[in-house]
Picture 1 (tube, rainbow, N blue to C red):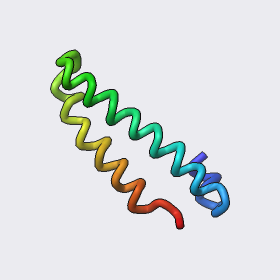
Picture 2: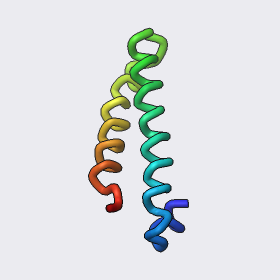
Picture 3: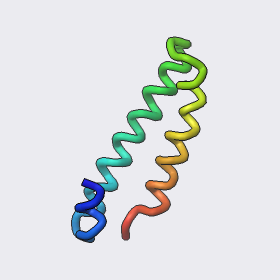
Picture 4: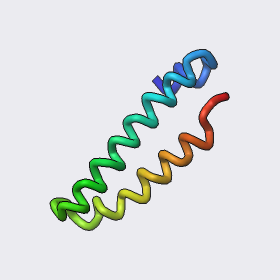
Length: 63
């Protein structure tokens, strides 16, 4: 999907919306697991990676 969106500007906003939704859900799930203390420490540290990916997605969102 990413390769197709890279060459077709009209589908890029839709692709970014799907990508940001998936990453946002991952952020929420990891935060929820950290609050409940049901995940390993590495998963809790991974929250920073998901937040960074979400911020990069917002920074490069097509106009």
